[in-house]
Image (tube, each protein chain N blue to C red):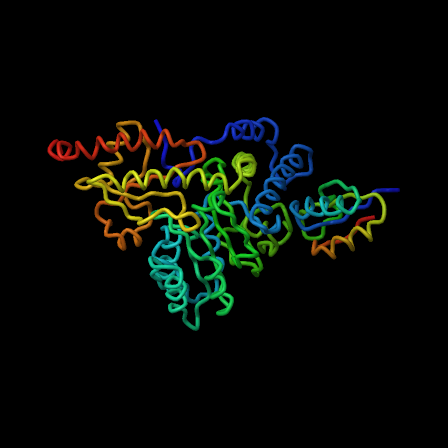
Length: 71
Length: 387
């Protein structure tokens, strides 16, 4: 399955999201959001393989704001 | 030289601080939260580990754990941030200039008014005196967790209850208690907790923390690059970026991380017991000595931070600390940047000598200190004649 990027507001939230998803059994890693996909300038994303919508919903339920999903 | 000035900054530091700082220079040299390459991301991960550790220490969320330069920096962010829309502040006579000067500056600019509550009495008097100073426009109480001069611990949870009932924010200065007393910002009802990283948390100088809990975004005292929402000229609303403009002090943060590991391994309760035990011994010995003035009746577990304040009759505090310096003991005299409490003690002119042990001091060192101090007391008349 191709990787999908979940965009987050900052590096701190990216690490928090990665740790949170790891506890839920979803592995991910951190990348800088690609230049062409940024909406308001710099941000970081977590790359997940699998159901990005489910991962994003989990993050939102933990009050970790998701800026978007890049497929 | 035997160091008893740990209330100013702890020294020596644990041996584990050295490899942490070396790693920061040799391995984690990227700019955290700025770039996408491995060196930047590895550095950012180490910074996040430190942030997570500090958050767990004080029962906060990692994003609400803000790195600062020192406790003064954290207090400036907290006080000026909470008071962004003006109003009145209640503070206490035990405060350090890191609280008093920002309040004075805001007041001089006509933005804020403040009242100093007398907190020299017992807990009931402290709470009642603070509550009495409230006004309809009171927005915050800014108070030390423990005095850096007399070690007196404030009843923070009771003060928090007053703040809750009056819809005011509580800012706490934990410069002397972080790493010495357990602090839970949620249970204690603290909105902003400020501390040094280089005292009881054993990081290097140039480190501090501001912990936020259940509070809306504060006003900022500094704006700039955060590595986030860079397309906007507005400072981010989210934490910690809102308060962390510019490149972080990675060396300091990684040292602080190692320092917090040291405190966790030793245990906060054990460190407090150790340091207070030395203080109680010194206090008892000083009490027996003629020619010594003590400014604390007792050193009480749970009521006192590990500090003993005294003077040698006939000498200024600086003369005593200089005589001790010549004998190989490092203690701090003068006003400890807390002028109002010295006014209360009647020591504004001569200051007072502060004895403050740390994790690496021993009772044997305290015995030597008492022995040398006895010599100073015995010889003070001839010292005075020399002067």
